[in-house]
Image (tube, rainbow, N blue to C red; front, side, top):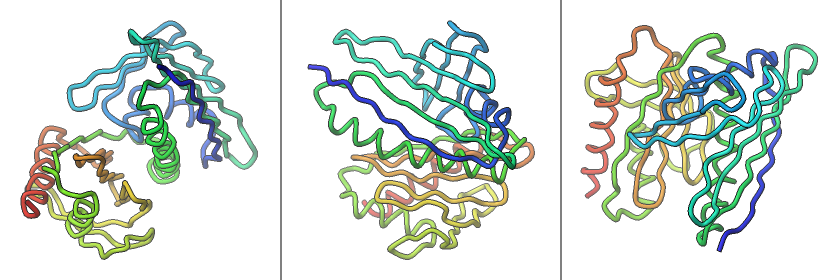
Length: 250
């Protein structure tokens, strides 16, 4: 049985409508704050695609009004399930913009868990968008993804392992200083800008780093803004860091 849902959020961003549009309606812009590697055909009826760890999802662009409205709708499953996302942009004074997001559709039998995950994820993603526009506007981020199964490790132990790996003390709080040394890359030295039960977000001088632990798995979604970033090298280094971290706790 399917269950309809709708999530609506609104945030004020420190950027012009044109800057917000570039961030939410172009592939390089989405790469700089959301998940995966993204492609956007710049037209209504075009395709918006996201690739995360080799898994590609596509949606049809239902609305394409530069500087005002961008909307996508995914394909329906055999049971009628689908998801649609709409962004509405409104310029405000002093170079700020109000962004309204509406995520709707039909969820399946496990709709409550899916809904809770979506409802919990959007505030974080919009916060990352704000961090991007406030600190890296005009720059294009390189998305870096890594994942590792937690081998049955309880969620509290998984979070504790990531906390220690970032040289943080529990409970993690916004404003704490994080440090990590993935092999072959410069050390990560930055400030915690998000901390909840599922995620830790860190901002450095050249990147936005997300450390997420879900049910039975640890994920990392990073956005790197340094010059000449080697994606393969960065992903291999962070994959090794994460796998080694979890192996220590096995």
